[in-house]
Length: 287
Image (cartoon, rainbow, N blue to C red):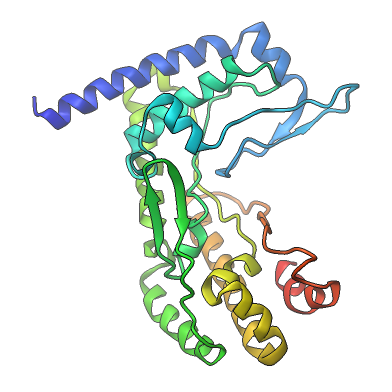
């Protein structure tokens, strides 16, 4: 047996043990008590566990650490976590078990494997470089791709040529497919221990304006709103169209019905955008 195959087999055995631990605990009184506090949770590939609670005298809460902390506590590389299905699944399961045991909160275990692509995920589709690090989640390069408002039209035309072979071949999408398909394959190889688990494909989370700030630069976009408003509308409309194309492609790939989209909007805030500017340049593309 080669060194690589031996390593994979050992990893598979570790994953089987972790799955067995979760499978035993899922039907425990402790886990059922926690689960009963939630009406639902967002069963999609998003950044964190997010739930909708039943009305109760005490609002349920969950506690979690960032991956940058978990990788140091559990001793794994975030470069491998985001690029190797075996490393991803093993440490995803370890994190789930550890947070369930460590924190006296209302998080509960379930047979869902939630994949998240990091903050660079959506931007990478447009050509923004993804920066990987051993102890940090992937982050988009801060260097704007569009140097001036006059370059927006050319950028759009160039992207459309690159996307002609399919949007799922751009940026981090091939890597997302590798982690998704690889994780499903590992669970199948785990036999009974992996039965009933659902792998959740990483969703497009970032809103149009947030992506625009990385393509053009935050300050540049704000200046363009005053000096070249047409270019901002062009860029925002283009980003929105690409997001819709992405959802269509993923829906077809997963053979699923359409889901409600997400709108993570850290960059949309009052110190930078007035209500009037928001209504003119951002809201039409969020609807």
